[in-house]
Length: 604
Image 1: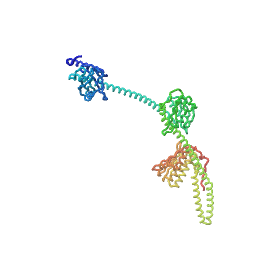
Image 2: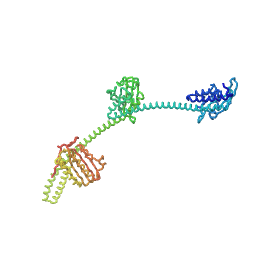
Image 3: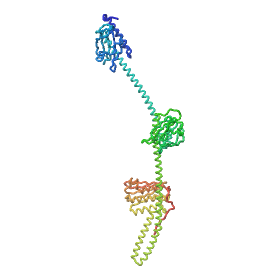
Image 4: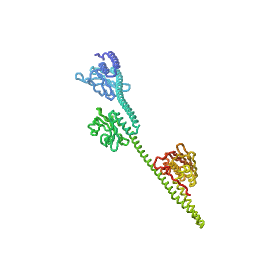
């Protein structure tokens, strides 16, 4: 060992060598504390008898990273070291330590902070004890030079360790994020596949409104979705669940069965409105073991089809007979995704089924009403014809006889009493008015000229009578082809006449018109009639009103023969358009035949 106090030049040379070695050591690896340990050993005994290096951790604790030459010294940081770490200022310390011969020796030491540009990261302690040397300015300078190099090294080392820790943490986070991302990607792909499948199934189920086809497709899709073998789909009925078909390995087998509410797995699903899974059917009391479709079953899942208000519409079940894995919650989730699609399709089919049934009932009721109206109208026409015949045969003949008698009486009274003759002549005139009234009533009840002279002549007489009785100008325009047209049957001609008669009645009662025009034209298929007036104009409420029985009667008469009646009101008046097929007979019972005619002739 050199006596450095007696040979300061040797100390100076050794110090330079130590600093050079320090540069070489500290320029190497920054991933451990070995260079510091070596440097501590090199500093002993050149700088001090003992040397220790401490670093300040991020949590505020102090860790010793190097010591030389004894491992049992400075294990616990003393107060002086903590003061240096806190203040960042070097500190000379003189204290007593146990000697080699169980005595007490006085030693001196210096604690130099290890600094970076901004903060203190540790401290290096040099102790003079065994050699008897004391710390001087040269020792302090050496210690500070060495501390400066160690400080730079520690700063870099700590930054490297922090960077490594951050990289490790970042790597863990990246790996964790990658795992999550891969899982999310798998879920996304599954979701996309499920959505595509549901879109396809939805289009397939909603492409038909036949409830049986929907249930068949639903059963097959449920089997396919969970990789099953067999299955069925049922529909909720009154107090139970009913099934019509069973699918066995892709083939349809007839299978009709009814489960009451709470009975069997479908009945249990109907009662509890939740999915039922059993992977041990042989020991399950809810499984109907006597049913052929349940024999040999190893697992079964049954899912209810529920609408938006919680009502069970039906169910679908999948049954496996081979030794496969049991059904899981994932299978339940897959089948539950079918429920909204199936619910909408079944509700649409049931609504269509109900609407079709209602339409059939409505059409039947409407047909019955039309038949009733036709029979009623037929009875009315028969009654009119009967009354007209009675008026003609009974009252007409009686009035004719009375008129002859009055004429004879008047002629004889002229010779005896002129006053009585004048009174008789007055009664005769009244009798003429009564005969005309009976003739008009008979014509209104049953226009005999319609059978004898045709529709045009009958309308000509009717318009003239209308004009005389109401004072409303009535113009009849009949096209040449319509006037010569004889294609209408007796029943059709009567229906047209009654429609026009009702239209003229409406003009007299409601229109407040001054003039009305009636025109008849023909097409190869139809007779076209227009009735126009210059009155107030009919309103839409009156056209569609429930109380406009006259308009409804006009429509019904035309519809019996496949025709139509339309009404249009405006400020200029009302136009009634009638389209009546030619050569058309009514399909309802109760129509008039051409043989049921009566002839009303003038009396006198």
